[in-house]
Image (cartoon, rainbow, N blue to C red):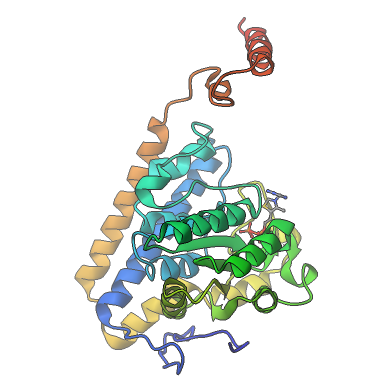
Length: 353
Ligand SMILES: Cc1ncc(C[n+]2csc(CCOP(=O)(O)OP(=O)(O)O)c2C)c(N)n1
C-alpha cells in the first residue's frame, strides 16, 4: 500500500529485494521477459515504418511501455481474460495475437483483427474507458458462473478521467468482481500531462472506491511481474478487485499523427530514455553474465524475422470488399443502412472516370 513505486531492478541493472513483493529473478525468467520486450519493440518500430510508407492509416506506438505490459501479462494464467485499450501490442504478442491481426485495424481492413475468444484478449477499444465497463460486466459473469478465471482491464491515465472509469471501479468494488485494473500511467493523454488531469493519483482514487491498489515502477518488468502476480492471486482467491498503477512513459508520439516535440522537451525524454525498460534488463544480463553471444544472436535473428513477417503480412492484407462496412451494422438490416450504402455507392461511382 506504499506510495513509493515498487521497484526491483534499478535503471542501471541492479536487483534489490522488496519485502512485500519477492520474486525469484533467475536467468531463464530474465531472458524470457527481455525477449518478449525486444520483439514487441521491433514490431512496434516496423509498424511505424509501414505507417510512414503509407501502408497503415495510423499507428499508436507502445515504445517505452513494454515492461508494464509484458510484466503484467506473463504473471497471469493463460485462461485469464484481458480487455486492452489500443496500445497493448506487447501484451497482444504475449497472447499469441498474429502480427497481421494487430495491423489489420490500422490498415482499414478489419474492425477487429483477431478472435478474442481464442487469445483471451479483447479487441482494441478506441472509445476511452469503454472496455473497463465491458471488463467488469464480464467479470461479474465469471463470478456468477463460478469460472476459474480473472480479468485484466487495461486503461491509460487519460482514460482514468472518464466517468466510465469511475463507474467501472465502483461496480467492480461493490460487486467484488474478479477484476484487476492495470493503468499504464504514461504521463500523457495526447498532449495533456497527467498532472493537469488529476489532484489525486489513480491508485489513491481506487482505494477510495474500496479497491486494493498498488503503485509500481512501470519500466521495471520484474516489479510489474511480481506485483501483478500477488495482486492476481488475491483477486483469484476472492479478495475483490484491485488496481495497479504502473508509472511509465510514452516514448513516441500519441499516434503517428502526433508531434510530441510541441508539448514536451528533449530533457524530459532523455530522463526517461535513461530509464528504458529494455536497457535495464540488458544491463542486468551483462552484470550477471546471463546472456551469451548465441542468445543475443538468436534474439537478433528472431527479431529480424518478426519484422520481415510483419511487413509481408501487412502488404498481404487485402482491402475489404466495397460496401462490407455496412454489412454488420444490424443483423436484420435496416432501411437507413441500405440508404447509406446506396449513397456511398453513388459517391464512389462519381470518381470512376
Ligand atoms: C471517450 C473518448 N474521448 C476522447 C477520445 C480521444 N482520445 C483518444 S486517445 C486520448 C488520450 C488517452 O490517453 P490515455 O488514456 O492516457 O492513453 P494513452 O493514449 O496515453 O495510452 C483521447 C483524449 C476518445 N478516443 N474517446
